Length: 187
Ligand SMILES: Cc1cc2nc3c(=O)[nH]c(=O)nc-3n(C[C@H](O)[C@H](O)[C@H](O)COP(=O)(O)O)c2cc1C
Image 1 (tube, rainbow, N blue to C red):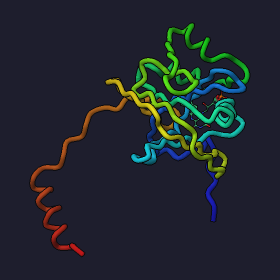
Image 2 (tube, protein in one colour; image 1 turned 90 degrees about the vertical axis):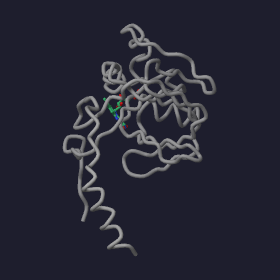
Image 3 (tube, helix red, strand yellow; image 1 turned 135 degrees about the vertical axis):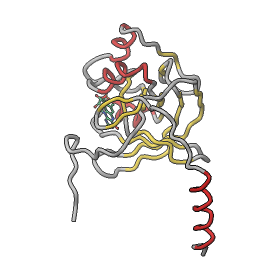
Image 4 (cartoon, rainbow, N blue to C red; image 1 turned 60 degrees about the horizontal axis):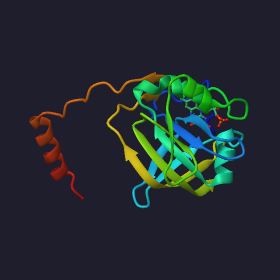
């Protein structure tokens, strides 16, 4: 049995970051929004992106073998929307965004721009491409990392959200019960 999911009937439960993926290649300096941006290993430090292969970003990365990942902050939803709704094949999104007041700076170890004011800037070297499903995986090793104290925007059901409040831990009575159950069902 198979399940068919489209962007219109997407799973509602996943909450993600928005990765702002920067690259340089046949389409020049470019940026796209990528909700499927995930850390998948500590050592080596790896980030996986799932990006359709016809996108300018995908083609830039395949050619240059490197990319930048900036995690969008709550102040960058306009940036995300511009980067995620038009292609670097048709328009210079970097210039558009600069004119809208966003700033980029050159990465230190790769030939790409990094987004200023993002929560995280990671410079990555492409280590593996996995051609699976309709969004091939691009796996990059982080060669330089910087985090700033900004709040990451949350993406869910095609909308932007803020993180909200931290939930409180269960009380001592519940924790004691869990400890007892652990003892009872120990293998
Ligand atoms: C918030 C957001 C998240 C997105 N996430 C992805 C994603 O994970 N993978 C993908 O292939 N496209 C994703 N997109 C769509 C691309 O950003 C969009 O197709 C973009 O125009 C590609 O740009 P490019 O052709 O310049 O690379 C997303 C769009 C938005 C607005």
